[in-house]
Image (cartoon, rainbow, N blue to C red):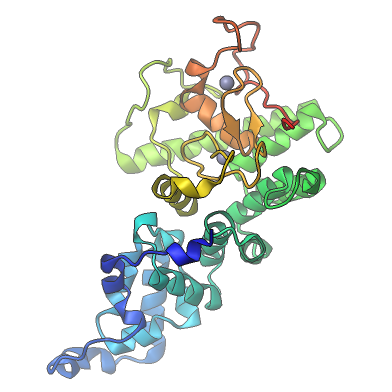
Length: 353
Ligand SMILES: [Zn+2]
Ligand SMILES: [Zn+2]
């Protein structure tokens, strides 16, 4: 089913997105906006660029555009939109509408790589426009957007949007390597496991271990940054231990902090569960949101066989977030001979069927 036909228009978003269409002009509007009329265009653009690059939510930026017609017009300037940070696109799935889509398209045309990535993910996974979505992500990837590079790597590893024979492991590794250069944790892990297992690349266990260590350092520093910014730790699971070393379940202490595109996908498929398609599953990591594009696309946990992951990165995150407590070998209630120092059990690289 074409999801575009199902797009709902939230009255809330319509109200917020009014500046993109027509502004109401009140009798005292001219008087109120007069102080801004005296400002030079360059100065207004500079102020709006700064705002666009530091907004904490879409409404934060959009409310500034409501101030006057001049802000509304200059806010759509390429110089402003190209600086937009990811939080400007933190659109919730329940607020998705044609206006939101139009805003994103304007930002894409304005040169925002964050908008290219966000809209690329929405088109690829929610609207099933595989070509359009991948090309938007490629636009962001060319500009070295790490998440876009990694998302394209996941698509290549899984052959998403095509058949099993469309999987291109070498392309996945090349894209992961580029994303890993920008310290993307998921890319570092996927690349590390390819090196450790000689999957699509010459085996190099030492290099693989070094990359896993780098991923853990990066992850730990990002957790500490979040703890610093929140001022406290929120515990998610009570069943696991609380070791703070590398490879521990340190992440289980924090709520997932997915990027806006992942959060959108998670919410979208909660709201539109029926759109998944028969036999298709979501990635089992709760912060990911990627759906399978054909049955048995994702790899299963090789121990319990009941969870599926789009990538090694998601498998590791879910392991730390609680699957290590729930996972048990099929037909057994013991851990068997699993190495507790590993990030998690191997996931099958061979699909079923
Ligand atoms: Zn995933
Ligand atoms: Zn498992």
